[in-house]
Length: 342
Image 1 (cartoon, rainbow, N blue to C red):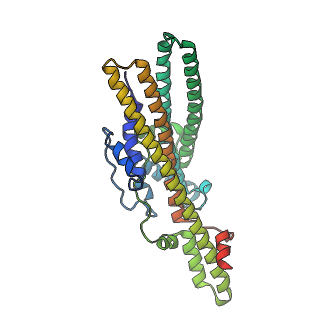
Image 2 (image 1 turned 30 degrees about the vertical axis):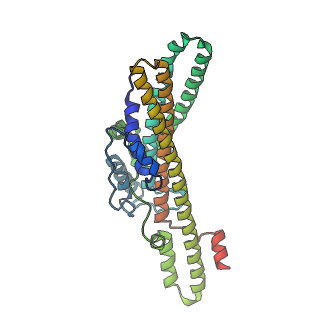
């Protein structure tokens, strides 16, 4: 049986997920890594959490090119770069570029995997028609194909939206944008951010947030008559920043755990598929059995590609929270902030 590009793509995809999933938290992931073929080990990026150049943690030259284009487009249209906000829908342009790009990577691989699964299902049709349960098996294949078509339509729409967003942010026509990203997408390399969580003291990262630094500066220069109000505002800003960073870390860790579980399951299914291929070579398994195992393998692979994209987006969300927000209006008191002030 011939396995095409998506099968090879999963080889690199597995290593990418293994690097992202923080192996120290899940030692069991070290085992499947040995099965990966033709996948270079990812090297940690230098200072990927730095305020400028954070995107280098993705180790993707195409992303760097897109961010430079977005900077130029923003400077040309507004004359200045937009300020960060702490809310995900209002990500700064550079982080919007990164989010759209990693989503585009994951969705492109997902579409290829779904296409391969559909091709395998169609290959099954003439095989099941010759069997005793032809009608039932044919109906099941029809359901699979319909589900695959619906999933592909959803992913394709999301991919097209990512291309449109990148086109607008980078100031280039969609056709040109597609040409720019095509070589990178052809590599079928899953998005990965090569960095551990911040190792410095949490207060160091907190005080470097833009909103906290600004509130602290305003507190320090405020006249005595306004010192109490400035202190209260500073406490609220710090409390909100703490909650936002904690929430982003919690969400990232949850996504890592989910991705790690999918990685493990995909690796297990791959072992079963490889065994079926070996049995077919020895005349002990039918092509129909191999196709069934292959489709199961592709299903988990597609779920893994989606989870990898979500994991990359989780890193972007955390990076945004580490940098913080510059708000015109004072922040609303959070529940924990109010409790600390009482």
